[in-house]
Length: 234
View 1: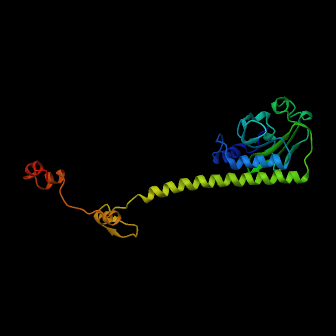
View 2: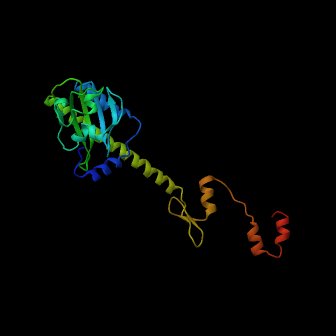
């Protein structure tokens, strides 16, 4: 199995996106569909290469099933920034025994453009497969590279959106906190003014207060009259 030189860092970068084993998403499905249509290929995938597997984020022409990394074309495609083109896998010692070649996929051509994150790590590929030997034109190669860049942009956007959602949850939690003075028990309002809790609640809700005394304070401050007052329900 081919392994990237900085594999631990690459895997950490991949997992930061928190997308492995996620449900299908239309934005990635659309990229796979576009790759297949633009390059006239029956099979197209957006794939991520994890530690022991290649996992399809989106797939057209074959089921969205993962494959062991040792059998995957894409595990070689992520070793370099350049496009990997395999004109005939049956003639390549690295791939001729792969289930992708010997099994129902019947791969006879492969081209994959690496998904290069801003960190420089290669996370996976946008790839296409044909069941007949063929070649890739320079224009088709550039289309594949462009789609790979678009997938990275989509991954970054998805990550940023998740991070923003997390930040908003924290902000909302902080917004429900009311600073209170540990000495005089005054509270601070939204305009940074300190006032009594009664004034703040009245300003926020329109509620009005009446005054009474709780049982504990009755016992503490009026011990002689406590039993009579509590019995009267005051």
